[in-house]
Image (spheres, one colour):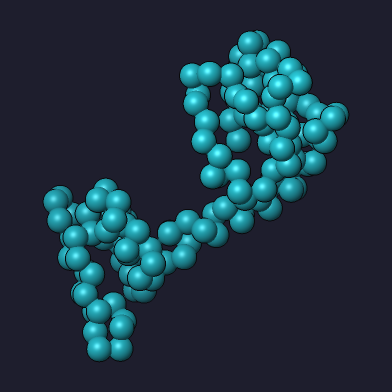
Length: 132
């Protein structure tokens, strides 16, 4: 959390490097026009521009709640979900990915193709570019 508040929308303390390292941001966040929203996993869907003061900030009642929200967000990430869903996300990204096999071995490269067998299980994974 680069920009965050701990407490309630009406009574809060600043935290996060973005607020604590900038006198301007630290002052601006107290403006009434800055929305103070409860922190939920939906915060990842809110766009922001790091070159401008933040129009909204998220408030967590305590760091335990922050940890719970971060765990909720993490559970949605491909590396946590694994399987075909993660492989399809890696393929769609076109970026180098690290794949951990059931054996524990890891492969790194750009996923170019995923082939399924008759039971719709992963049978083959093709990597492009430099692969390790």
